[in-house]
Length: 224
Image 1 (spheres, rainbow, N blue to C red):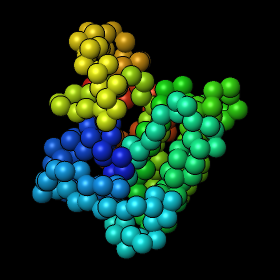
Image 2 (tube, helix red, strand yellow):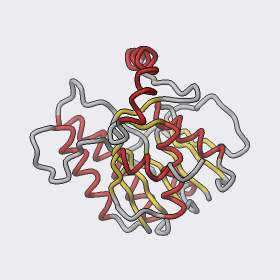
Image 3 (cartoon, helix red, strand yellow):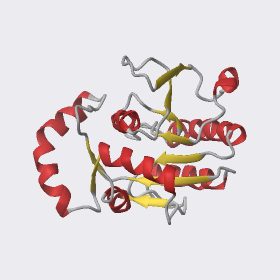
């Protein structure tokens, strides 16, 4: 299986990358980012690309992939809806439309978030925008598309958040999350489980198009 990965420098993306590199069924992982990851692996290939709203310059490198794991995103804190929409909706759809045209047999998996608003009309700005993005992705002519909606994500295996404040919080509450996770499977998952679930769904599909945190945990309960 050949995989395209967006957002590999972020906490979720790093966790997903780790699981892809460990999986013997994965032949190649191609990371698309604005900068290099700073790591090497025989399976890892990197494409450095500046304009995430236009992929025409690298289209010749984007064909022949079985799955895309889209882990790229930003916090909505302090952002106006138009700015958040441009990064969350416009950027994601620019990539997804290109990939749907070049790889109609691809499975596309998008990391959204718990409480995303599929109606697109709720009172919470980020949830509306995420819902609009999910709905648009589900309409694209991929072989299959799945929306992952994790809640609290615990970083494991040395994975860290790029945001210093968030990382400091994870360090402090890490033991608490480990204690609460088996007791609150609807709300807490890990970077490892998100990665494993993506791989499982890319290989075998899933009975639902939208996977909440509990669904992600359930998918990974039957694998390593």
